[in-house]
Length: 352
Image 1 (tube, one colour):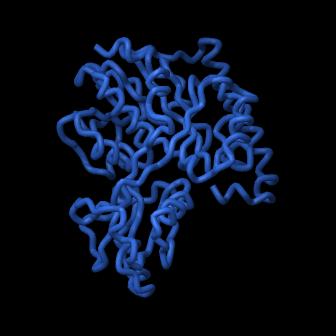
Image 2: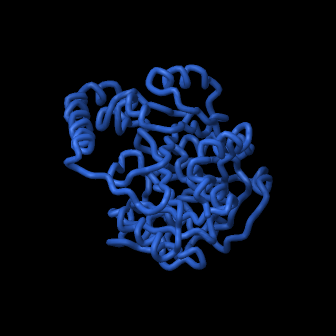
């Protein structure tokens, strides 16, 4: 996201953003005119998406929604494109009983969800109509969560949720490539609800809500990313949050908003002696891990910490003499789950 803070770059790329804007509008018009058609699957569909590139906390939101739906007795499945994966076609990541494949073939986000959501089928594929049909026919899903689905217009949805990172909601306000916006702010009128994530990392919510209200009057939810413990990347063991409190650590992250991870570490009183950044969804090679470990040794670090997504993308087997940990987090709605359950009520009526 920092790339979009360069004012000169933003001005120079404005003509390309203008072309991109008209491309988005033209594609939308083709759907409105029926030239492109949206498919209605024989299941309820909840889309979770965003209007910016980069990390908005969408994956923890998908996880939390899946847990709520499952606890309500729904037969829920998750559909994902599997961004950055090496696999092709439709692939079952998890059938709800076991994980059937490896991270590189699925992408980091679907594999992370599969590990955290036993009992919930997860299917990846660029053609999410076919992926949805497979989830319904093979696993009996009657509710599907369409991950990163706000711009995916070929599937009709019953509920459209948009995640917005409160710590960096709209960037410089420009469209791709001059800015981070995938669509104009006016597209928020298509949403049924908006969920601000990481609201604990930014206290000025009123101005952000006012900006939303210029385009949409749907319910606005607030959520936080709540750390729950450290996971040993080597063996999967859990450790309490204060386990690294007095240790010298090196941190690294290859996510859309790495500064949010640094901020979370500060709240845990973990001050890294070095913080290495990689591009979003970066798949680490052995040489990268060697560089990380060598830097940690040079800085006198006793431990290396990263995010759960980054832990998925590390090479196997791990070759580092310093312990590596990922920070486990979960999304919590401020004020509890009553409001999100009210928003989900139209699909919950069909849970059986």
